[in-house]
Length: 424
Image (cartoon, rainbow, N blue to C red; front, side, top):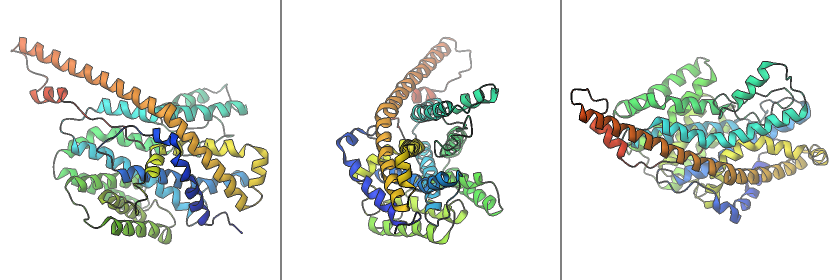
């Protein structure tokens, strides 16, 4: 007999998704080569997204039975999704703080935020728009209340405020995953301030250490969960700083993989939640070993893993819609709820559908969105350079005026930059 909370079905489901990523159409995923990206991190993203999906898979069963969306009573499936989210936060901080550390000239933050908006926004709007359309179809919306239209407006702002259902009838149609995006945006908006510290060799390591220590202190004293998320971002920044200074563990990649795997297992064996100082530090240490060279015995660097990583945002964001689409079929739902084995079989169908949805969304929505964002960023950059040239020319013709733009800034504006399309 198969139990709902048995561990092995999760690994079987992921293993059965592996051949799917080998389809020829998956060769078209990705945003182009980028030397700043670590292949193992790209490969890690797909499995982190699938970890969150498996976490919600058992929660969804409870919701179908009782109507309640709540944390599962499982030492494995409970922390599984939290570990996935924790490592996503760490990855975001590592990539963008690393971008500040490696920048040869001042980072153009309006351009960076614009590109982030077009990386996250298009698929987010599609997902949220679909969720709200389902609510409209249910007919349970109060159209006389101004709050309804206010929620709809804020729901469409690229995830800055997350998603608030227009009614209670479809509260988990997106599997309640959008809560992480406001924290991501807060981190992006903080980058101009963080950049001040990135230039000084002491401050660039002092800032993440202080933030991490503050997070642990506040978490230990019963502070808001947001302090734990701050620690995860700080941990990612610390990993990027250590890498920038060459402070890496010089072991064989298999040894690094074994230690990283042992630390991940330790989180599930020792702790009941991943949002605590202990598992937070273990997640940070695990990720640092991946940065150093741990590839989990080649799994993370395999082409199929990287392809899943490239569509990980779609896997993460569209999982609730895949669940709803699958379990809205009455015979399929009745079959799934008969016993745990049949539920996992139907959940496999839902996850195959999810991966295919994420693939289509990547090709039709994400890639065109990133391309448009890059073009708009190029226009914005050229406009900024033109303003710099005009200001400099005006100052040259009027020597009595105080210059607003330094020669270094002018050179930085003309210097070509390599832009990325980093995914969540």
